[in-house]
Image 1 (cartoon, rainbow, N blue to C red):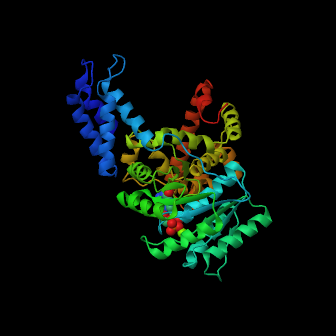
Image 2 (cartoon, rainbow, N blue to C red):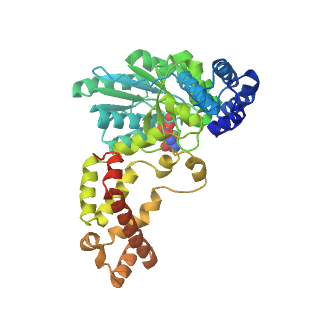
Image 3 (tube, rainbow, N blue to C red):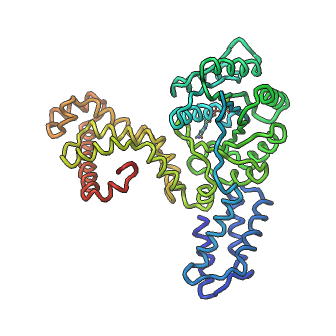
Length: 437
Ligand code: GDP
Ligand code: MG
């Protein structure tokens, strides 16, 4: 990855007190290549490396810091700066606040509308109303309705109307009447920029005067994303960018280019299909990601959010009394599943993203485990020790698995119990775990 390459190409600098034009050239070439690989626009990459060069040149290499590390830091800080430096939050003040989604078809507007509503509801105590203004495809309305149901947020629809402006205005009136404080307007996109779409979205914007007009863009579309962003911004003058499908190995370069080209903050990123797969955009972390360090901070935060502190305390008590049973085990699996797709999460760990590329881990991995546990009687779950040969056979039959599968699970259960006990042993490690106090 880039940071390793930088450090390597700077090994030669050891013993030399200064970064010079000559010994920095190779590194800068590496940086530029990596940026281009990460979908960063050519001119932006070139300007960027020039700035890094200016900063690095003549800088004294302190004996305490390896030149390579210093270089990584310069590149990192410069990247973060280029992406805006700080996170910019969404404005949801107002009665109601209005958020308008824009973007091409398939960019993730509808999914993000659901994610945002869910986040505002669960994390900020808001009462959102979702509005289906994609009047061209009945399936689009249904998609939003399903998401709304899933997250427990009402969805305003009007299947008889083909007038998105009217629908949005009616929805806002209803929100006011019902005391909803955020109205999220999902709109129709097209597969490519087209005049009708642009006219429509600008008309909606003009009519409802949103607090936030968000441009949603698929990070996987690379350079195209930048061009689309530019055109939307020229017509719509949006307030912020939502970068979706940033899960797995998606290169983060689009973030860099978009920010530079439209000069609008990226506010959130989408990291999966689930409603929980939304993160505030942090330039520092994206810089880490582009440098290949992995998005550890986001990972930890995510784990922290999902890990119920109360549950954790209870669990620790049970462990210390040796009462950890299959009900707790099931609870743990559900906790992990709540964190989102396992692959999404694991891919944020440095080095793991690549390794997992061709491996298929997802929630299905837990399916047979859950089936087995569900086929146990309450008593068996509470006291796994009583699960003898004939019980194992019955459980296997009931769960559609084999006795070997059941045996394997029982063994895994014993092992994880031991491991958790060890971890909680001195209380030391548990205290450092998220949510443990
Ligand atoms: P719209 O046409 O702009 O409304 O796009 P949709 O919200 O319907 O999303 C298009 C497809 O992308 C759907 O299959 C979504 O599940 C998927 N999608 C949306 N956001 C993400 C994301 O952050 N990660 C992944 N992996 N898929 C996403
Ligand atoms: Mg849609």
